[in-house]
Length: 89
Image (tube, rainbow, N blue to C red; front, side):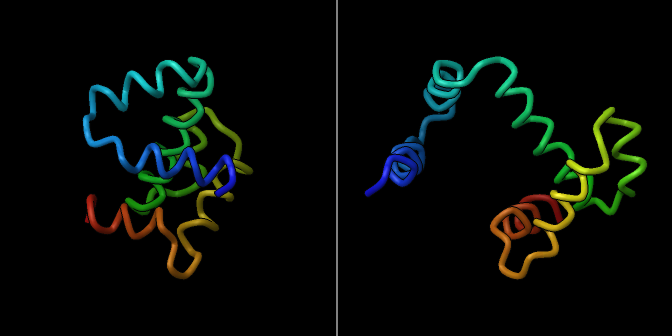
């Protein structure tokens, strides 16, 4: 098992939200957490059919970042799209 798989296995086995939050607080910098939060916000906005320009204006981010998110949601069998469909449709 490589290091990435090991980390994913560890995260998948944490079933306590408070402990998971503490874990991420300890391993991620505030900037890394903010970037992850922003990526999630833009993916949710795309899923809600907001336009890329609307998202760029509202979140003050480049269209390049948004285009990447759009491609993810258009990918067949996307894990992100599956999660968004399940939780936000």
